[in-house]
Length: 236
Image 1: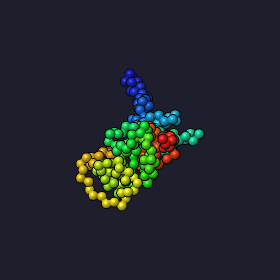
Image 2 (image 1 turned 120 degrees about the vertical axis):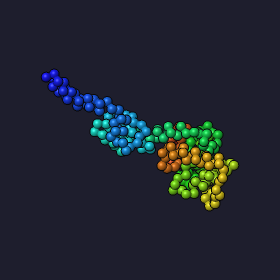
Image 3 (image 1 turned 45 degrees about the horizontal axis):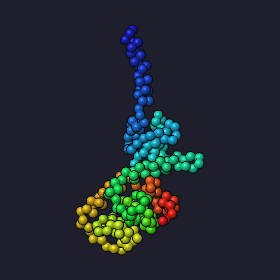
Image 4 (image 1 turned 90 degrees about the vertical axis):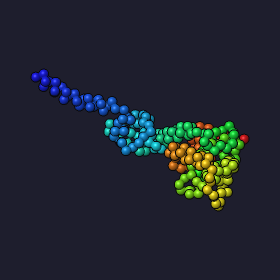
């Protein structure tokens, strides 16, 4: 009789233990178990109760434990604040702040700090660069990111890194002076190492387009000149 009672108790307890075990799983453990094909960088509570923010590369997803839903979309407040976009900019800003500035192409010595991710054959990059070049109150830290859609961009980056004055060569590229130029292969090992470093650094940002800026700690996507002017203030 005692054996039957023990067995019955055990059988009644098993579902409860399974439920407790499931309930005790962290959101990270539960997400990893239920969505093994989605890699993620971090999971944390979202602004909506019961929802978790999942950062997966350059994407932000939302996860609901229990029913095991993944929601792909944006959270908008009634006053039209896009909380998903704000969070995405915050994450991007954190990445940009962590870049090794000693690896960047440095131009200027002004009080405003500008970190740039740019492509010498990107029209909007050139527009933003023209705006920044006209100011003497910025220190620019430039990381070159030649996009695959611009086959002549990488040879221009090599030219910039091989030049004795990389800053002047950069201005040549961004003002179109190199567009009709034929480039010889650079044999400079230091320039090749610098190009490799810029490739690795920009790849780690999960950036899909250019230009991208961090101006005095604020992220600016694209050649948003009005926003850049607002951050930097009037030209001295």
